[in-house]
Image 1 (cartoon, rainbow, N blue to C red):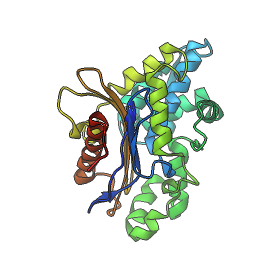
Image 2 (image 1 turned 90 degrees about the vertical axis):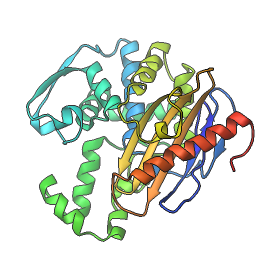
Image 3 (image 1 turned 135 degrees about the horizontal axis):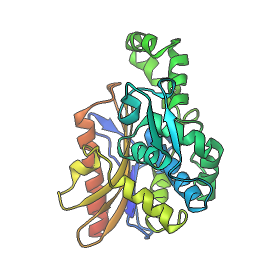
Image 4 (image 1 turned 45 degrees about the horizontal axis):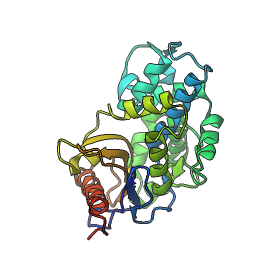
Amino acid sequence: MGAHPAAGSPLPPSSPTGGPATAHPQGASPDVSLSPDTPVPISSVFKVLLVLEFARQVAAGQLDPRERVLVTDGQRLGGWGIAGCVDDVEVSLRDLAYFALTVSDNSAADVLLSRVGLDTVGMLARELGLARTRIVGGPREALASMLDDVGARTAEEFAPLYRALPDEGKRRLSVLDPARANASTPREVTRLLDLIWRDAAGPPEACAQVRALMGRQVFRHRLTSGFPDEVRIAAKTGTLPGLHIEAGVVRWPEGDTYAVAVFARSHAMAADLTRVDAAIGAAARIAVDSLRAGGEPS
């Protein structure tokens, strides 16, 4: 985990969780971190890079944000937003970006990725100096790897086969292996946020679009839980069984701004664990408070 003025802080091991993290103040070099260079699967946090690349292509005139696409049954994965719809939905590219970041819509991300290009998202990471960040596919590829890992042909077959696996078998899923999944490190994730918040990750209008959409994320149970109501947080969650992530930027009323990334692993191989979500917020607050005080976390 990590934090820096615009980034995160280390997540000390606790009874339910433990993991890498980082935090640092925006545009500044100090940071607070624990294992900040440990590669970790980033799950839906990859959507920040995806939408940034989309916004850059729009700014360059390569894509029309008003272009409409039809999302059909074969493109839906289940979940939030379009992904959970029963009927076909026609939507603009810019609304796909909206759904991908605000409700972590997997179908929206897949369709947008097919338009933007997988290779270009990986090239963007390298252009920004994120040498340890790798993007190998979208949500559909992640689902396909999970089906393969348990020997399922369909999502319906997957559920009982997954439940029957021992926890050690679940931990060996490809999506939880940073060598086989979309992955990065806490340091590089907070660096990405720092670049976006300083308009250094692309044209100012592209960075502004990503900031605005992250500020509208509907999930408020992780980083936000560690801070007072007056603190503004723009963030993106990522969740897999046993892996709970959030990366975002914390802004205090007086303007102090910190980028934070917390990656937590849990003993229980579940996606919804309230204690872990609360630990993410607590760890982020420890890191940011330490940076604000100019010292080390206790």
